[in-house]
Length: 178
Image 1 (cartoon, rainbow, N blue to C red):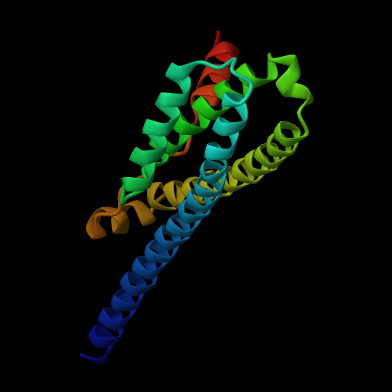
Image 2: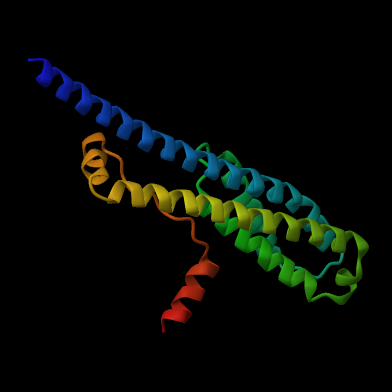
């Protein structure tokens, strides 16, 4: 009877430890996602300045500016902060920078140069946050996929998470695979 009680206690401890491990990894992913959101929001807060700067020089695409404004509003109103919407907005910001850089007068502007440096710094921080997020997701996915953790993951209904991939990353991988 005592041996059976000890076995039950050991099994319960294993379940508790495994569950807590999965919860800890899930929370680490949430924290990493939050880091990406912070950098996206900081970058998106610079967008009105960039738009005004580009507008001031008259050579811009109204469609691009409208799309950026619309995407920024959607992202800000999204309570779940979908990272895919954030990536799409980020790509449009990069397009706007490309348009702005093609204008020599604007390129020489000190205001634009400072803004561009801020955006480049923000992009660097955003890339670092994405790497951290993807590392956390990979660790979590590996943990719930390996034996015997996969059994506990199924019991506790833990599912794999998606890596954060931008369109640029996907295009690079397609080119490499060809």
